[in-house]
Image (cartoon, rainbow, N blue to C red; front, side, top):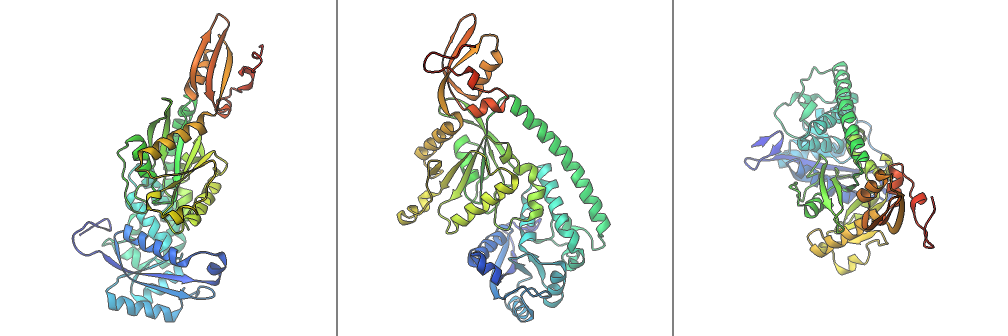
Length: 435
Protein backbone atom coordinates (compact mmCIF):
# COMPACT_ATOMS: atom_id res chain seq x y z
CA UNK A 1 0.00 0.00 0.00
CA UNK A 2 1.26 3.48 -0.85
CA UNK A 3 0.19 6.80 0.58
CA UNK A 4 1.21 9.98 -1.27
CA UNK A 5 3.69 7.91 -3.24
CA UNK A 6 5.47 6.44 -0.18
CA UNK A 7 5.62 2.76 0.51
CA UNK A 8 3.80 2.17 3.81
CA UNK A 9 5.06 -1.32 4.35
CA UNK A 10 2.23 -3.32 2.77
CA UNK A 11 2.32 -4.28 -0.90
CA UNK A 12 5.15 -3.77 -3.36
CA UNK A 13 7.18 -0.60 -3.74
CA UNK A 14 7.48 1.10 -7.10
CA UNK A 15 10.36 -0.46 -9.07
CA UNK A 16 12.86 1.78 -10.79
CA UNK A 17 16.06 1.68 -12.83
CA UNK A 18 18.73 4.22 -11.92
CA UNK A 19 20.74 5.69 -14.79
CA UNK A 20 23.91 7.81 -14.71
CA UNK A 21 25.70 9.59 -17.56
CA UNK A 22 29.44 10.17 -17.11
CA UNK A 23 30.74 12.90 -19.42
CA UNK A 24 34.20 14.33 -19.99
CA UNK A 25 33.21 17.41 -17.97
CA UNK A 26 32.41 15.21 -14.95
CA UNK A 27 35.74 13.41 -15.30
CA UNK A 28 37.71 16.67 -15.57
CA UNK A 29 35.94 18.19 -12.56
CA UNK A 30 37.25 15.40 -10.32
CA UNK A 31 33.76 14.30 -9.25
CA UNK A 32 33.01 10.74 -8.20
CA UNK A 33 30.24 9.37 -10.47
CA UNK A 34 30.08 6.19 -8.40
CA UNK A 35 29.33 8.08 -5.20
CA UNK A 36 26.79 10.29 -6.96
CA UNK A 37 25.03 7.19 -8.29
CA UNK A 38 24.99 5.59 -4.84
CA UNK A 39 23.57 8.81 -3.42
CA UNK A 40 20.84 8.75 -6.07
CA UNK A 41 19.96 5.20 -5.03
CA UNK A 42 19.67 6.39 -1.41
CA UNK A 43 17.44 9.24 -2.55
CA UNK A 44 15.23 6.79 -4.44
CA UNK A 45 14.97 4.53 -1.39
CA UNK A 46 14.10 7.57 0.74
CA UNK A 47 11.22 8.22 -1.68
CA UNK A 48 9.99 4.66 -1.13
CA UNK A 49 11.25 3.23 -4.42
CA UNK A 50 12.86 -0.17 -4.96
CA UNK A 51 15.91 0.15 -7.20
CA UNK A 52 16.10 -3.02 -9.31
CA UNK A 53 18.94 -2.11 -11.68
CA UNK A 54 21.63 0.52 -12.29
CA UNK A 55 23.05 1.51 -15.66
CA UNK A 56 25.96 3.81 -16.46
CA UNK A 57 26.81 5.38 -19.82
CA UNK A 58 30.06 7.11 -20.80
CA UNK A 59 29.83 9.83 -23.45
CA UNK A 60 31.80 12.93 -24.39
CA UNK A 61 28.62 15.05 -24.12
CA UNK A 62 24.93 14.26 -23.45
CA UNK A 63 22.84 13.23 -26.44
CA UNK A 64 20.48 16.12 -27.24
CA UNK A 65 17.55 13.81 -28.02
CA UNK A 66 18.00 10.72 -25.82
CA UNK A 67 20.47 12.08 -23.25
CA UNK A 68 22.25 8.70 -22.97
CA UNK A 69 22.00 7.83 -26.67
CA UNK A 70 19.55 5.62 -28.58
CA UNK A 71 21.48 2.41 -27.90
CA UNK A 72 21.60 2.91 -24.12
CA UNK A 73 17.91 3.88 -24.18
CA UNK A 74 17.13 0.50 -25.72
CA UNK A 75 19.23 -1.15 -23.02
CA UNK A 76 17.14 0.64 -20.36
CA UNK A 77 13.96 -0.59 -22.08
CA UNK A 78 15.20 -4.19 -22.05
CA UNK A 79 16.22 -3.94 -18.38
CA UNK A 80 12.78 -2.59 -17.49
CA UNK A 81 11.04 -5.46 -19.26
CA UNK A 82 13.24 -7.96 -17.43
CA UNK A 83 12.88 -6.44 -13.94
CA UNK A 84 9.33 -5.08 -14.07
CA UNK A 85 10.51 -1.50 -13.52
CA UNK A 86 7.98 1.24 -14.28
CA UNK A 87 10.29 4.22 -13.70
CA UNK A 88 13.73 5.33 -14.87
CA UNK A 89 15.56 7.79 -12.59
CA UNK A 90 18.43 9.79 -14.10
CA UNK A 91 21.27 11.19 -12.01
CA UNK A 92 21.39 14.40 -14.05
CA UNK A 93 18.84 17.05 -14.97
CA UNK A 94 16.90 16.39 -18.18
CA UNK A 95 15.30 18.85 -20.58
CA UNK A 96 11.59 18.70 -21.34
CA UNK A 97 12.28 17.35 -24.83
CA UNK A 98 14.54 14.59 -23.50
CA UNK A 99 11.88 13.56 -20.97
CA UNK A 100 9.23 13.43 -23.71
CA UNK A 101 11.45 11.44 -26.09
CA UNK A 102 12.47 8.92 -23.43
CA UNK A 103 8.89 8.46 -22.22
CA UNK A 104 7.62 7.79 -25.74
CA UNK A 105 10.44 5.40 -26.55
CA UNK A 106 10.60 3.49 -23.24
CA UNK A 107 6.98 3.69 -22.03
CA UNK A 108 8.38 4.43 -18.56
CA UNK A 109 7.95 7.30 -16.15
CA UNK A 110 11.09 9.44 -16.45
CA UNK A 111 12.40 11.22 -13.35
CA UNK A 112 15.65 13.19 -13.01
CA UNK A 113 17.66 13.93 -9.88
CA UNK A 114 16.14 17.38 -9.37
CA UNK A 115 12.57 16.09 -9.60
CA UNK A 116 13.37 13.26 -7.21
CA UNK A 117 14.73 15.66 -4.58
CA UNK A 118 11.72 17.93 -5.01
CA UNK A 119 9.46 14.91 -4.63
CA UNK A 120 11.11 13.94 -1.33
CA UNK A 121 10.76 17.50 -0.07
CA UNK A 122 7.07 17.46 -1.02
CA UNK A 123 6.54 14.40 1.15
CA UNK A 124 8.53 15.81 4.09
CA UNK A 125 7.23 19.39 4.31
CA UNK A 126 4.92 19.81 7.29
CA UNK A 127 4.66 23.54 8.03
CA UNK A 128 2.68 25.93 5.85
CA UNK A 129 5.88 27.71 4.85
CA UNK A 130 7.60 24.47 3.90
CA UNK A 131 4.63 23.30 1.81
CA UNK A 132 4.46 26.64 -0.02
CA UNK A 133 8.21 26.64 -0.65
CA UNK A 134 8.22 23.12 -2.07
CA UNK A 135 5.28 23.82 -4.38
CA UNK A 136 6.99 26.98 -5.63
CA UNK A 137 10.17 25.04 -6.38
CA UNK A 138 8.20 22.28 -8.15
CA UNK A 139 6.28 24.71 -10.33
CA UNK A 140 9.42 26.71 -11.16
CA UNK A 141 10.99 23.42 -12.28
CA UNK A 142 7.85 22.36 -14.17
CA UNK A 143 7.17 25.58 -16.09
CA UNK A 144 9.85 25.25 -18.81
CA UNK A 145 9.14 21.49 -19.10
CA UNK A 146 5.36 21.45 -19.52
CA UNK A 147 5.65 20.02 -23.03
CA UNK A 148 7.68 17.10 -21.73
CA UNK A 149 5.50 16.03 -18.81
CA UNK A 150 2.84 14.03 -20.65
CA UNK A 151 3.03 10.74 -18.76
CA UNK A 152 3.83 12.32 -15.38
CA UNK A 153 0.85 14.70 -15.53
CA UNK A 154 -1.56 12.04 -16.79
CA UNK A 155 -0.67 9.39 -14.18
CA UNK A 156 -2.65 10.37 -11.12
CA UNK A 157 -2.23 7.08 -9.28
CA UNK A 158 0.67 8.14 -7.09
CA UNK A 159 4.35 7.33 -7.09
CA UNK A 160 7.43 9.53 -7.21
CA UNK A 161 7.28 12.60 -9.39
CA UNK A 162 3.49 12.98 -9.09
CA UNK A 163 3.10 14.75 -5.76
CA UNK A 164 2.18 18.40 -5.49
CA UNK A 165 1.77 20.10 -8.87
CA UNK A 166 2.51 16.79 -10.58
CA UNK A 167 -1.03 15.73 -9.69
CA UNK A 168 -2.63 18.50 -11.75
CA UNK A 169 -4.51 17.57 -14.91
CA UNK A 170 -2.85 17.37 -18.31
CA UNK A 171 -4.50 20.60 -19.52
CA UNK A 172 -2.46 22.69 -17.04
CA UNK A 173 -0.95 25.45 -19.15
CA UNK A 174 1.85 27.93 -18.64
CA UNK A 175 -0.51 30.78 -17.81
CA UNK A 176 -2.09 28.79 -14.99
CA UNK A 177 1.33 27.79 -13.62
CA UNK A 178 2.64 31.37 -13.80
CA UNK A 179 -0.44 32.63 -11.95
CA UNK A 180 0.05 30.01 -9.25
CA UNK A 181 3.74 30.90 -8.93
CA UNK A 182 2.81 34.56 -8.45
CA UNK A 183 0.27 33.62 -5.78
CA UNK A 184 2.78 31.39 -3.96
CA UNK A 185 5.37 34.18 -3.98
CA UNK A 186 2.77 36.56 -2.53
CA UNK A 187 1.90 34.13 0.27
CA UNK A 188 5.55 33.41 0.97
CA UNK A 189 6.30 37.12 1.14
CA UNK A 190 3.74 37.43 3.95
CA UNK A 191 5.30 34.46 5.74
CA UNK A 192 8.77 35.94 5.29
CA UNK A 193 7.66 39.25 6.76
CA UNK A 194 6.37 37.41 9.82
CA UNK A 195 9.67 35.54 10.10
CA UNK A 196 11.60 38.80 9.77
CA UNK A 197 9.56 40.39 12.58
CA UNK A 198 10.20 37.33 14.74
CA UNK A 199 13.94 37.57 14.06
CA UNK A 200 13.89 41.27 14.89
CA UNK A 201 12.22 40.56 18.25
CA UNK A 202 14.86 37.94 19.00
CA UNK A 203 17.61 40.36 18.00
CA UNK A 204 16.29 43.15 20.23
CA UNK A 205 15.90 40.78 23.17
CA UNK A 206 19.58 39.83 22.93
CA UNK A 207 18.90 36.16 22.17
CA UNK A 208 22.04 34.40 20.95
CA UNK A 209 21.40 32.07 18.00
CA UNK A 210 23.36 28.98 17.00
CA UNK A 211 22.53 27.11 13.76
CA UNK A 212 23.33 23.53 12.80
CA UNK A 213 24.29 23.26 9.13
CA UNK A 214 25.69 20.41 7.10
CA UNK A 215 25.22 17.77 4.46
CA UNK A 216 22.06 15.71 4.66
CA UNK A 217 22.30 12.72 7.02
CA UNK A 218 25.40 14.09 8.78
CA UNK A 219 23.67 13.84 12.17
CA UNK A 220 22.35 17.38 12.75
CA UNK A 221 18.94 16.30 14.08
CA UNK A 222 20.55 13.68 16.32
CA UNK A 223 22.88 16.32 17.72
CA UNK A 224 19.96 18.69 18.36
CA UNK A 225 18.09 15.94 20.17
CA UNK A 226 21.09 14.91 22.28
CA UNK A 227 21.98 18.48 23.26
CA UNK A 228 18.48 19.77 24.02
CA UNK A 229 16.44 16.59 24.63
CA UNK A 230 14.23 17.79 21.78
CA UNK A 231 11.55 15.46 20.45
CA UNK A 232 12.67 15.61 16.83
CA UNK A 233 12.92 12.95 14.14
CA UNK A 234 16.41 11.52 13.70
CA UNK A 235 16.70 8.75 11.11
CA UNK A 236 19.50 7.31 9.01
CA UNK A 237 17.89 8.71 5.87
CA UNK A 238 18.50 11.60 3.51
CA UNK A 239 16.40 14.65 4.40
CA UNK A 240 14.88 12.96 7.45
CA UNK A 241 13.84 16.42 8.62
CA UNK A 242 12.93 19.35 6.41
CA UNK A 243 11.37 22.17 8.41
CA UNK A 244 13.76 24.02 10.77
CA UNK A 245 13.46 23.26 14.48
CA UNK A 246 14.65 25.60 17.25
CA UNK A 247 15.19 24.64 20.89
CA UNK A 248 16.73 26.33 23.94
CA UNK A 249 20.25 25.13 24.76
CA UNK A 250 21.83 25.70 28.17
CA UNK A 251 25.61 26.19 28.18
CA UNK A 252 27.90 25.17 31.08
CA UNK A 253 27.83 28.72 32.49
CA UNK A 254 24.03 28.58 32.71
CA UNK A 255 23.59 30.93 29.77
CA UNK A 256 20.83 29.94 27.33
CA UNK A 257 21.06 30.20 23.55
CA UNK A 258 18.70 29.15 20.76
CA UNK A 259 19.88 26.13 18.72
CA UNK A 260 18.29 25.69 15.27
CA UNK A 261 18.46 22.65 13.01
CA UNK A 262 18.34 23.58 9.31
CA UNK A 263 17.57 21.52 6.22
CA UNK A 264 20.47 19.39 5.02
CA UNK A 265 22.43 20.22 1.89
CA UNK A 266 23.29 17.86 -0.95
CA UNK A 267 25.40 18.06 -4.09
CA UNK A 268 23.50 19.33 -7.12
CA UNK A 269 20.89 20.83 -4.79
CA UNK A 270 18.26 22.15 -7.20
CA UNK A 271 18.64 25.88 -7.78
CA UNK A 272 14.87 26.36 -7.59
CA UNK A 273 14.90 24.66 -4.21
CA UNK A 274 17.68 26.89 -2.86
CA UNK A 275 15.76 29.93 -4.09
CA UNK A 276 12.45 28.77 -2.62
CA UNK A 277 13.96 27.82 0.71
CA UNK A 278 16.12 30.93 0.99
CA UNK A 279 13.97 32.34 3.82
CA UNK A 280 14.39 29.13 5.81
CA UNK A 281 18.07 28.72 5.00
CA UNK A 282 18.68 32.30 6.06
CA UNK A 283 18.42 31.06 9.63
CA UNK A 284 22.11 30.38 9.04
CA UNK A 285 22.61 34.02 8.07
CA UNK A 286 21.00 35.24 11.29
CA UNK A 287 23.00 32.94 13.55
CA UNK A 288 25.78 34.21 15.80
CA UNK A 289 27.56 30.87 15.40
CA UNK A 290 27.34 28.05 12.83
CA UNK A 291 27.95 24.43 13.79
CA UNK A 292 29.01 22.67 10.58
CA UNK A 293 28.22 19.00 11.23
CA UNK A 294 30.10 16.56 8.99
CA UNK A 295 29.83 12.78 8.68
CA UNK A 296 33.33 11.55 9.45
CA UNK A 297 32.39 8.03 8.30
CA UNK A 298 31.41 9.08 4.77
CA UNK A 299 33.90 8.18 2.03
CA UNK A 300 32.99 11.51 0.38
CA UNK A 301 33.28 13.62 3.52
CA UNK A 302 35.69 16.17 2.00
CA UNK A 303 33.45 16.68 -1.04
CA UNK A 304 30.39 16.99 1.22
CA UNK A 305 32.21 19.59 3.31
CA UNK A 306 32.96 21.54 0.14
CA UNK A 307 29.31 21.36 -1.01
CA UNK A 308 28.10 22.86 2.28
CA UNK A 309 30.68 25.63 2.13
CA UNK A 310 29.59 26.47 -1.43
CA UNK A 311 25.90 26.70 -0.44
CA UNK A 312 26.76 28.84 2.60
CA UNK A 313 28.70 31.17 0.34
CA UNK A 314 25.72 31.38 -2.01
CA UNK A 315 23.54 32.31 0.97
CA UNK A 316 26.01 34.96 2.12
CA UNK A 317 26.83 33.13 5.35
CA UNK A 318 30.39 32.05 4.51
CA UNK A 319 32.01 34.60 6.85
CA UNK A 320 30.06 33.61 9.96
CA UNK A 321 31.91 32.34 13.07
CA UNK A 322 31.92 28.55 12.75
CA UNK A 323 32.78 25.35 14.60
CA UNK A 324 33.52 22.35 12.37
CA UNK A 325 32.22 19.11 13.91
CA UNK A 326 33.38 15.73 12.62
CA UNK A 327 30.47 13.58 13.83
CA UNK A 328 30.12 9.76 13.88
CA UNK A 329 33.76 9.11 14.81
CA UNK A 330 32.54 5.92 16.52
CA UNK A 331 32.14 4.56 12.95
CA UNK A 332 35.64 5.59 11.80
CA UNK A 333 38.80 3.48 11.87
CA UNK A 334 41.95 4.77 13.54
CA UNK A 335 43.70 5.05 10.17
CA UNK A 336 40.84 7.07 8.68
CA UNK A 337 40.63 9.25 11.80
CA UNK A 338 44.14 10.55 11.18
CA UNK A 339 43.03 11.89 7.80
CA UNK A 340 40.30 14.13 9.23
CA UNK A 341 41.05 17.82 8.78
CA UNK A 342 41.81 19.46 12.13
CA UNK A 343 42.32 22.91 13.55
CA UNK A 344 41.50 25.10 16.57
CA UNK A 345 37.84 25.37 15.55
CA UNK A 346 37.37 21.67 14.80
CA UNK A 347 35.93 18.97 17.08
CA UNK A 348 35.89 15.21 16.55
CA UNK A 349 33.02 13.53 18.37
CA UNK A 350 30.11 11.14 18.53
CA UNK A 351 26.67 12.56 19.23
CA UNK A 352 26.05 9.58 21.55
CA UNK A 353 29.05 10.27 23.81
CA UNK A 354 28.25 12.31 26.93
CA UNK A 355 31.91 13.29 27.23
CA UNK A 356 32.00 14.54 23.63
CA UNK A 357 28.76 16.47 24.08
CA UNK A 358 30.24 18.19 27.15
CA UNK A 359 33.34 19.14 25.13
CA UNK A 360 31.13 20.54 22.38
CA UNK A 361 29.16 22.68 24.84
CA UNK A 362 32.39 24.11 26.23
CA UNK A 363 33.63 24.86 22.70
CA UNK A 364 30.35 26.61 21.85
CA UNK A 365 30.62 28.71 25.00
CA UNK A 366 34.25 29.60 24.30
CA UNK A 367 33.34 30.66 20.77
CA UNK A 368 30.33 32.72 21.83
CA UNK A 369 31.52 34.37 25.04
CA UNK A 370 35.05 35.36 24.14
CA UNK A 371 37.49 36.82 26.71
CA UNK A 372 37.22 37.99 30.29
CA UNK A 373 37.20 41.71 30.98
CA UNK A 374 36.02 44.30 33.51
CA UNK A 375 33.44 46.86 32.42
CA UNK A 376 33.01 50.27 34.09
CA UNK A 377 29.48 51.36 33.28
CA UNK A 378 27.70 54.55 34.39
CA UNK A 379 25.02 53.70 36.97
CA UNK A 380 22.45 55.46 34.79
CA UNK A 381 23.06 52.98 31.91
CA UNK A 382 21.00 50.07 33.19
CA UNK A 383 20.40 49.01 29.57
CA UNK A 384 24.13 48.32 29.14
CA UNK A 385 24.34 46.31 32.35
CA UNK A 386 21.25 44.29 31.38
CA UNK A 387 22.70 43.53 27.96
CA UNK A 388 26.02 42.42 29.49
CA UNK A 389 24.13 39.91 31.64
CA UNK A 390 22.13 38.63 28.65
CA UNK A 391 24.96 38.13 26.17
CA UNK A 392 27.86 37.49 28.56
CA UNK A 393 28.79 35.56 31.68
CA UNK A 394 28.99 37.95 34.67
CA UNK A 395 30.86 36.54 37.65
CA UNK A 396 31.25 39.62 39.85
CA UNK A 397 29.61 43.05 40.17
CA UNK A 398 30.30 46.08 42.34
CA UNK A 399 28.22 49.25 42.45
CA UNK A 400 28.25 52.72 43.99
CA UNK A 401 26.23 55.84 43.30
CA UNK A 402 27.94 56.63 39.99
CA UNK A 403 29.45 53.45 38.58
CA UNK A 404 28.83 49.73 38.11
CA UNK A 405 31.88 47.45 37.78
CA UNK A 406 31.23 44.09 36.10
CA UNK A 407 33.68 41.21 35.71
CA UNK A 408 32.32 39.52 32.63
CA UNK A 409 33.20 37.07 29.89
CA UNK A 410 31.95 38.79 26.80
CA UNK A 411 32.34 38.80 23.04
CA UNK A 412 32.89 42.34 21.80
CA UNK A 413 31.05 41.52 18.57
CA UNK A 414 27.90 40.78 20.58
CA UNK A 415 27.90 44.24 22.17
CA UNK A 416 28.52 45.86 18.79
CA UNK A 417 25.74 43.77 17.27
CA UNK A 418 23.23 45.50 19.52
CA UNK A 419 24.75 48.91 18.83
CA UNK A 420 26.96 49.26 21.94
CA UNK A 421 30.75 49.40 21.35
CA UNK A 422 32.60 47.72 24.19
CA UNK A 423 35.86 49.69 24.29
CA UNK A 424 34.59 52.90 26.01
CA UNK A 425 33.55 50.79 29.02
CA UNK A 426 36.42 48.31 29.21
CA UNK A 427 38.81 48.94 32.14
CA UNK A 428 42.53 48.86 31.51
CA UNK A 429 44.78 46.75 33.72
CA UNK A 430 46.31 49.97 35.13
CA UNK A 431 43.08 50.97 36.77
CA UNK A 432 40.40 51.67 34.27
CA UNK A 433 39.22 54.31 31.88
CA UNK A 434 37.91 57.60 33.23
CA UNK A 435 34.67 58.60 31.53
